[in-house]
Length: 333
Image 1 (cartoon, rainbow, N blue to C red):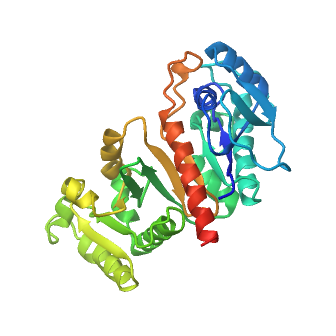
Image 2 (cartoon, rainbow, N blue to C red; image 1 turned 30 degrees about the vertical axis):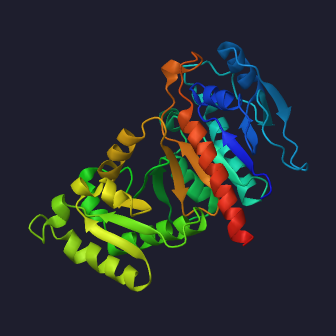
């Protein structure tokens, strides 16, 4: 395949995003990494971390070149005010969103084959008077996508969510036939098209304890989940369930499925994060572009200390490269 060009947005400049990007730049990659950021901020952070870095201005007209240790191509965007590690500043909130916009538009235009995002601080963006609920919603709007699906993954496990950051009391009402049809179709399609799995098998969790126990602990399984699954199976999808969530995450089930589909955030993600803490990543399904992300926050107290863990970014970049290869093979069978 041709070498992929991957855009990286470090996220909140006062957090560990710049640190882990600089750490990632210390090794070779079979991809061209382009960080969209303020070059002065990165140089100052590299000095604080005592990491060698040579920033090279990104030249989009030239063919991509493999990432060499200690170097990093940069698409420069200036901060409004200098960033202070560990200290949030609302003046830099528009900068954070501009980096995301440049990466997304670059992917839509074909200049980048994927984008990898570092952690943002939603509170400081909202404090700046900018409505912002997260990367996922921002990228859906930026790409004109009606429905997206959040999936977290390690090398061993993938968990996609029917609902995301929703109060538990609101989950049952949100689980509708329309929602399940949309999200399961997106998950199935992207497992095929982006992950290169010809016939994905998805384990679908029930909503209630023991998957409703034949209606004795809730009727959502009988009235909503089962009819949806039967309809999708008739269309050719390989779906297990609805399965009781307390027994679904066992080696026998996981060995025979490509993803687990959970009804709500804390049903599926605690298991994934326990099994792959520090290595999990976030993948947004349903977008017309490829986007992976770290699965951790800005860790303001660790910024510029050298104690940040960059393994989640390493995994996000690794999966982004794999998805680029899968996309290329899909287009060039």
